[in-house]
Length: 217
Ligand SMILES: [Zn+2]
Image 1 (spheres, rainbow, N blue to C red):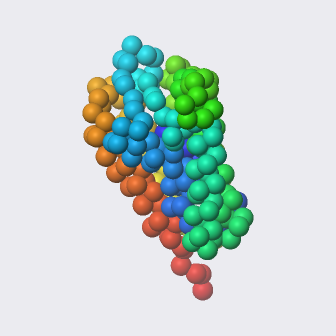
Image 2: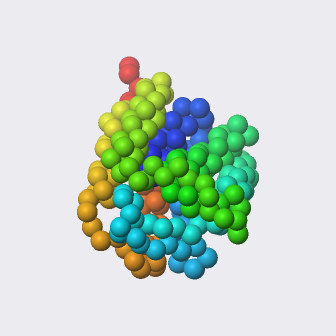
């Protein structure tokens, strides 16, 4: 799951309009930001199995994606949001968005998610094995979450076109990653490029969030 995660972050902006959009977008990929970091240290790892249908990654991700750790990271994100003086409701939404990542990964991943670090990886419905429906699910989620977000922006006199460009950019990224290409075997390369990508998508949410329409006279 990639762009489907962002759907939750964008839709959450309608529940917590005071939350900065970049925070919600970053929260939706918090676990994968952790994964990109930990594969460079060796604490988590992956290997490529090109015989698999769809996503070719076989993942060892106990510290970022076990159920227990996903709950821990959600609590950490809530605490961080509170530390940055966000209201409790906003902080709880940020934590819930972090945990939404795990739920969507549970749907898409093959059983590579454990209940806790060190436990057997047994959780995952394996929607990755059906790449076309999986991509349709992600685009559908983005259409719904993005649609809610764009509609809500109207209430705050925000222009729609930066939001629509942002959604188009995410769909373009998804198409780019769906094109046939040899999957990266080098963990440092995967980690660095993952961090750059996730931080870039998070960073450009900041100007998108600040595009107000001029007040009508
Ligand atoms: Zn993930």
